[in-house]
Length: 172
Image 1 (cartoon, one colour):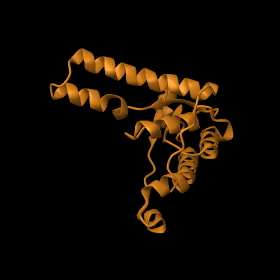
Image 2 (cartoon, one colour):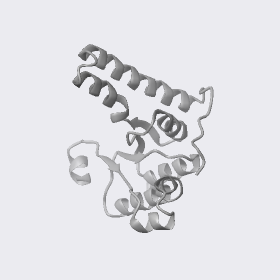
Image 3 (cartoon, helix red, strand yellow):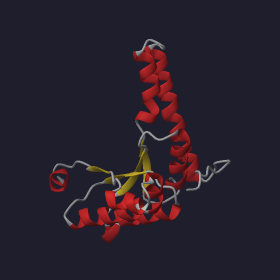
Image 4 (spheres, helix red, strand yellow):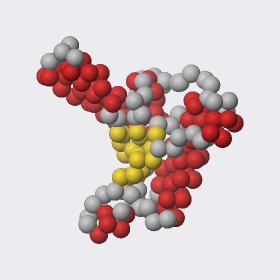
């Protein structure tokens, strides 16, 4: 796919989801939230490197949200390993608004993170309301547009360092 994309002047995007294995969860007493903070970032770096070593060369890696700055730096560095030009995009995972804000705040200032792919968190509730006749199509479109633009503004403010407060997720 990487070869085809390059030969056809197409940008390849790889959405890299790295779920916990049974062994990961057993080591953490089943705590998925602990996995996301402690093991997933390192696993993500290893998977990126493995895929690169086997010829996968995307323009963008879509990676799950990160809780720590150092993890975002490590993943962005892995994406650019060996002079590669790939950047990273934060994937939303239908997380809460607070978690999305935090993940954007962590990633946006890191060189190599260029955006986000937040879908369901933006459109699910407005679409659900419209489909169940609790809003008009126009109202749903406006809510979706406003949610998207709010995340864009937040990402830009986080990149520029102009956010007024810093969200900290609950400690594990």
